[in-house]
Length: 153
Image (cartoon, rainbow, N blue to C red; front, side):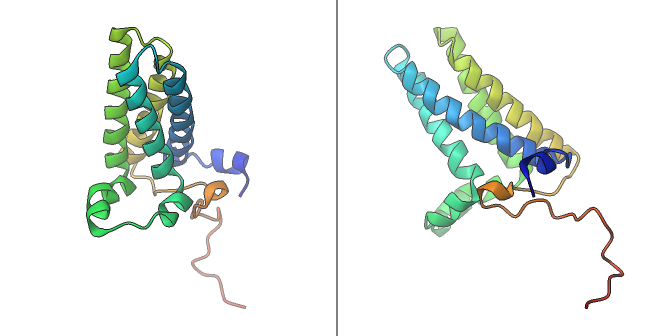
């Protein structure tokens, strides 16, 4: 499935995934740029960005061997509600950086807030967890046609 077709599905978990990936890249870049001016918030931005990327790219989760303790800690992030809470915490910390003069980190705060909002909408609508096929995910599970009465060939 192509990128444009994935965006047309109306599944907010897919929108949340793309916004979280964008947030991850922005947080790493902006955290690096503002490192000398805002050390603590820059380190947090880089860590949050790395976590966003690791969580959202299914292929990375398959490459890193995990143990039971890691699965207990981050296994819930497969759920929309847990991702919403995680990204909301990231957003609150990045918005707090504005109080200390971390102006450019607001761009990362905006995108993380939007990702949290998409996961909230997906959770409220009880949409299925969908990951983009471009990054090693399963894609949308619907074919847009009814296959319940299909006869195997």
